[in-house]
Amino acid sequence: MTELAEHGGRASLNDYLAAERTLLAWIRTGLALMGFGFVVARFGLFLRQLEAAQPALPVRSYGESLWFGTALIAAGIVLSLASGWHHARLVARLNRGLADRPHTAGLAVAISLFLAAAGLAMACYLISVRGSGP
Picture 1 (cartoon, helix red, strand yellow):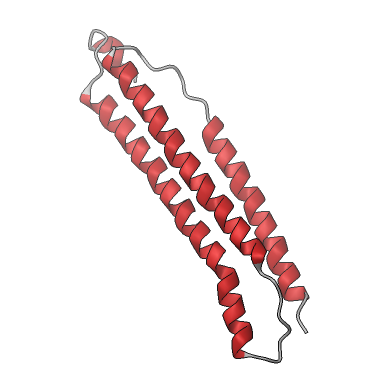
Picture 2 (picture 1 turned 180 degrees about the horizontal axis):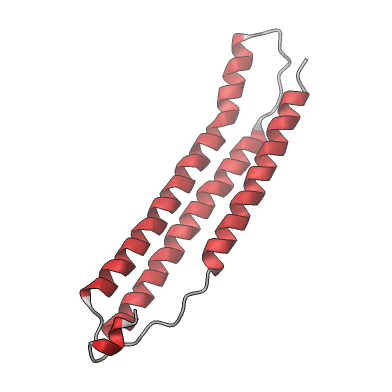
């Protein structure tokens, strides 16, 4: 975004394209989170089907996978909304000819920490499900 000063305060096409590429990358990440959340939410259904195929296994509850999956889907929705909001603000600033301020990595760090916590929780859940077998 340093080209703004070189063009007399106007944003170049490269600035807009860079902003759009960033938006698309965040949208891909949000969609991946939502897709992974759906798979995790349906994991409990898969385990129940396995138990139905083997009647000797005790019946257990797998409701936690629904909550983990729903949390990942919600994170994907929040990420998509936040990235769209950020992109709209950035394009508005570029249209006004304002050089964008340096970005913070707050959103990326927050999503990374959330995913690390969700992954740890899912790993603990899978270990507890595996350990409670016959």
